[in-house]
Image (cartoon, rainbow, N blue to C red; front, side):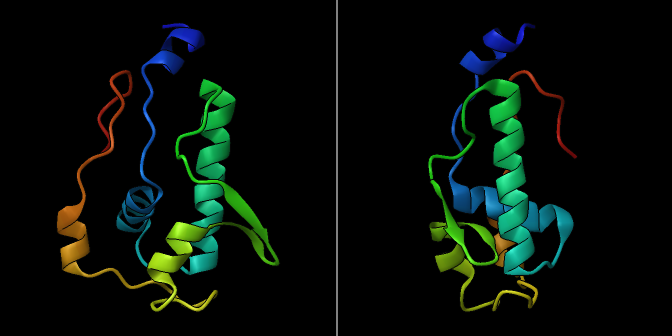
Length: 106
């Protein structure tokens, strides 16, 4: 499938759902690492598909790019360098993020 055709089938993901998915996949990480991973995910998606994966804009903060909504959701659980702890309830809310053109994510 051509890159242009694939871009037509992508849909945006809520940034907080993407953050929970990342936490589910990589485990406990700091707010700083989470924000940077979200930034790189967005950058790769922009480079490959030519459009953003999430609607939210990244803000330029002192320690790097931040999605304000994600920061607000986890600000009580992590102070920049401390790990975010996810509980079982958060993991149950996750559904696999899949694209119609991508292989199943394990």
